[in-house]
Each structure stands twice: as C-alpha cells, then as structure tokens.
Amino acid sequence: MERRRVTFENVKSPRALSRLEFIFKIHFVFDGGLGKGEKEPAMNLKRWFLWLCLALLVVGEVMLFKANQQRDAAIVARDTARHDAAQARADLEQFQASAAAAQGAEGDRLRRENQNLSQTLTQLKVETNRLQQANQQLTQQLATLGAIAQQQQQQLQQWQAASRQASTVVQQAQSQAVIERNACIANLKLIDAAKLQWALENNKPEDAIPTAQDLLPYFKDGVIPVCPSGGTYTINAVGQAPTCSIPGHALPQ
Image (cartoon, rainbow, N blue to C red; front, side, top):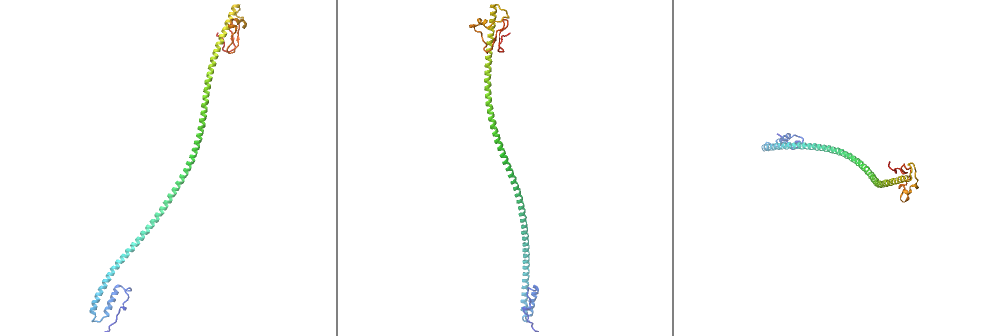
C-alpha cells in the first residue's frame, strides 16, 4: 500500500477551523504520515499530544471564559461608569442650572432690595433735610418769640413802674386834693363866721350881702383867705353859706 505523504500544509489555519476540527486534523496528520513500525510510539505520542491539546483547549476555554467574563464585567463596569458619569454630568448641569437660576433670583431679589433701600435712604435724606429746615425755622421763630416776649416783659415792667408811679401820683393828688378841699372848707367856715359877726355888729338882716371889704377886719392880718386849689369864693347873703367854684369845696349842710 502506497504511503500517502501528508504534511501540515494539508491542515487549514486554526483561525478558520474550530478547535475540535483542528485537533482532528492534527490526529489525521500523525496517523497518515507514519508507517506501521512507527505507529505504536506515534500513537502514544499522539495520545499524549491529544490529551495535551485537550488540556490546553480546556485551559484556553476556561481562560477565555474568564477573560470574556472579565471583559463583560469590564464592559458592564465601563457602561456603568459611563452611565454614572453621564448621570453625574446631568446632575452637575442641573445643579449648575439650579444654582445659576437661584443665584439669578437671589441677585434679582438683592438688586430689588438694594433699589428699595436706596429709595428709602433718599426719602430719609429728603425727610431729614425737611426736618432740619423746619427745625431751623422753629429755632428762628422761637428766638423771635423769645425776643418779643422779652420786649413785652420789659414793656410790662415799664407799664408796672408807670402804673405804680401813676398810682403814687394819683394817691398824692388825691391826698393833696383832700388837703386843699379841707383847707377850702375851713376858709368857707371863716368867711361864714365873719359874715355872722359882721351882721351882728351891724344889725344886718339875713338877706344882707356883705362885701369883701366889709369882712376884712374879721380876718387875721386883714387878708381874706383864698382857695388853695385856685377856686373863687362867693360870699352870698348872711343867711346863705358862702360857696367855692371848685366842685366838692362846700360847707356841709
């Protein structure tokens, strides 16, 4: 039987075949490329090589499975990390938007409060200036009223002094008038007494009217008395009391 020459060139690349096909291809190469005398050691070598390939295949499968698991876990972790990063980015953007909105609202509120405070401060300044002007006007008015009150007080003191002087003058005048009235009445009594004495000595009736010359001898030093107030005496008849031209200067009835 003709030995068929089989080489590894008859085996396709392991990348294009499955792992089991690759192992069977190796088995066929070893089985067909040796003679009968060489089959026994080759069979043993083939078995060991086959078991070694199976072991390597199992180990490779296990390692590939673990690598796939690690890859899948890494992909999941990557996707989770990307999702978390996207969520964190979205949360950050939302937080920044919320912070910007809150900052804008707070800024608007602070600006409004600042404007209100500025307006209030302006109103207070205007009110303060008005109160200061009113205070100055009141101070001037108080000073004017104080000066007027002082002048009125001085005038009142002057009026009081004048009133006291007038009262004193009136009192003095009244006293002087009383003195002069009493003196005039005393003179009228003297004239009336002189008339009665003249009538008795000269046997004159009551309707007789003496002259001033007739009565001179009956007065001291021959001088007829005169009214101290400047009044004019009227001798009248013997039966009638003498009178004075000053009102109030009269003999009692």
